Amino acid sequence: MRGEEAKANSEAMARYFKRESKSISIDDQAEDYRQRNMMAVLMNGTDETISGIPAIPNGFVAEAVQAHPDVFLGFGIIDPWQGAMARKELRRCKDLGLHGIGEFNPAR
Image (cartoon, rainbow, N blue to C red; front, side):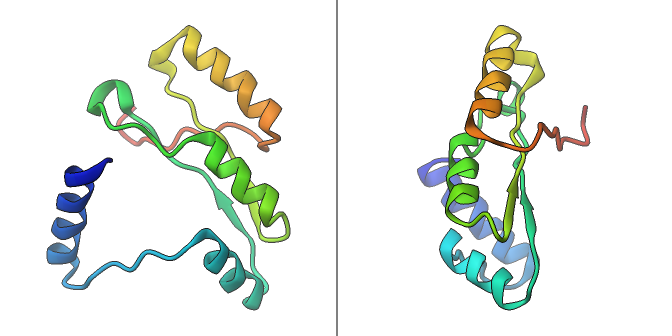
């Protein structure tokens, strides 16, 4: 989500959950996991061809994993509806060093 749409979504979630969401940096999140002696899998979902909302780039996930390999494992995502572009992104995920591909979209 970008700009006004992201702001509107954040405000709607705050009303629904009756609390403000607080964003933290990936570095702070990594440190929190380190202190708890935990690891996390970083993986996003995408339905860009349906919603028009771009996903968090696989490159961002890869950068977070490269910066904090002791606490993060990264999985890439692709939108299978993108055909040849999805296949290209699949290869790119391998080149980025991501551990696999996940699709987290219950609507499919």
